[in-house]
Length: 247
Image 1 (tube, rainbow, N blue to C red):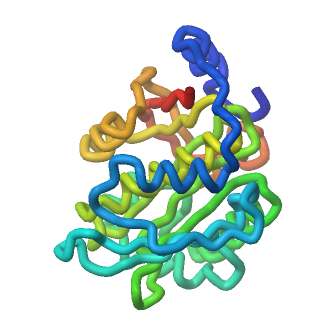
Image 2 (cartoon, rainbow, N blue to C red; image 1 turned 180 degrees about the horizontal axis):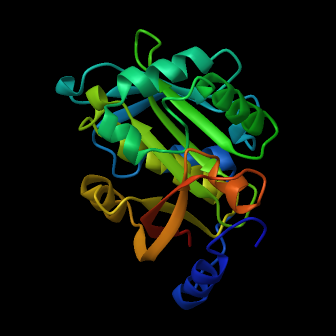
């Protein structure tokens, strides 16, 4: 199905799971529901959306309901001018282990800013969907994305700054992307995670993702572009392949 590399596996799984229609609520309503459903850690202070059916322009302000969780944060689209902040997020906000677990970007490359410019372009052209989370100092504390968001089954990527891990921000970002995918009437979301990243694996399972098996994934490149033959990957890793069926 398009550039989706797991279509046979996931397509078969969809048939077995009895996939159904998503209903008629507008996209923004589905995202709002996804954020508030069973969420005892943050409340949604506001949503900005010029178009309720256009997730490429959504912005959210989230306030923690538990004081110990710390600051509020704003979630908005990745945009031109964010390149330097994204480099700082990756090189300073993520530990070396976290960078190894989140590897669509060549973190040590002198061309790293240019890679983020490509991501911004892909977002602006609606090929992918990229959001970032900002703390009260406007520092990037998380990055979440759906590659090939217009495909039947987009692929999710997520990274949370080490200082914000354990504050439930990651699970909230998973819900936001689930709401977006439901609003876009996608059949499922897929992701891959390294076998050594047990914490993420259990977080995905708690969010409803199911394990399908292992897959060899390209590193330090745009995953969808690599499987479409648009870029060449030089590094690979065997990862767990997981799927969330949206019914």
